[in-house]
Image 1 (tube, rainbow, N blue to C red):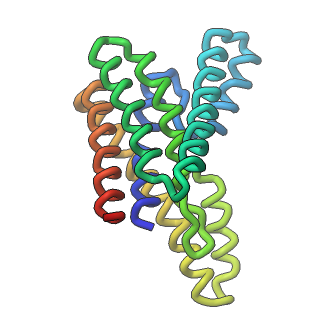
Image 2: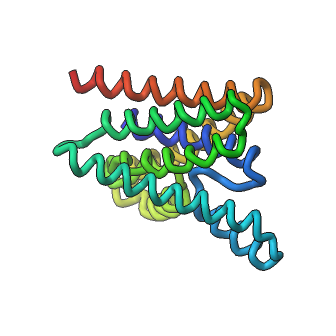
Image 3: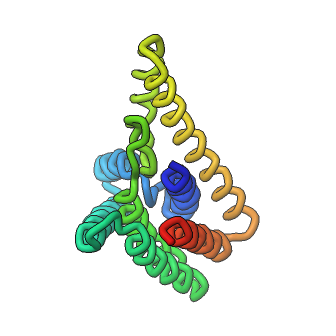
Length: 205
């Protein structure tokens, strides 16, 4: 549960950076990007629409790659998927420091798609993803069923916690980007992913 919660925070952190750098597009929230894509097409903003399509395609490719790595590992594959994510984020950090700001953000969408394959189901609550509509919907369902017992209380708490942690990650990412700029923000993201890898390996040893 701790890992899944941390993954959600990292997604929020990354999403805030992407939103500020990519013209209100996201690196994790593909529903929002799909809405923006439709609006761009309607407004004949073809360059913006192309960028949105590239980001969505990169996210899907990351999800496919993460699933492939996890399936081939013969187990949960947490370390391998996070290791691949670390390589992508490290490449993005290098691009950012070289001055390729927009190009640095697009691979992060792939990293977030990859990271979403590591979500966990705890007390019937699906946590660890970078999109929260399902969690908020489940929270509403659990609130309506609180009288059924502790399982619904636990489920409501976990779904509510996922939302709060994501928002906290967004706050942290926004403040980091506003204070230190893109390069430091992405470097911080790399440090966070490194911390996840260390925590997973320590738990597995």
